[in-house]
Image 1 (cartoon, one colour):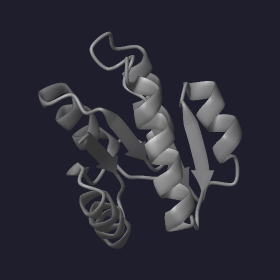
Image 2: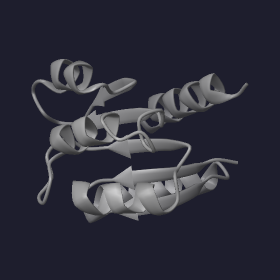
Image 3: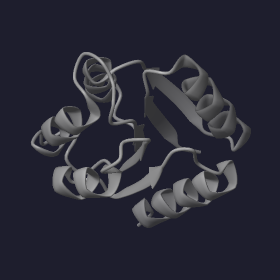
Length: 122
């Protein structure tokens, strides 16, 4: 299945996402902030990145903007999952492929992940 990087500062949300992803057969890589997320993505490029916007040590918007400007990371699809009031606007401006507002339905999140991974298939 897919290798998915979760960039989320809430350990509870990371655990929830990891459990969902692993139940679907995916490998989950975790990062607690944007800086660690970039390092993880550069080390082992994931098939998909799920990212929060509001995090310490490089917020999601800054991280996403950096990723979109970095050739090795530019084409990796990014799903922003955030409680930020302007999640849609910020996600569009920074180049996210899709976004969802927290709280999210795990079923809707699963569907979105499946859609995004299917779109990557040749």
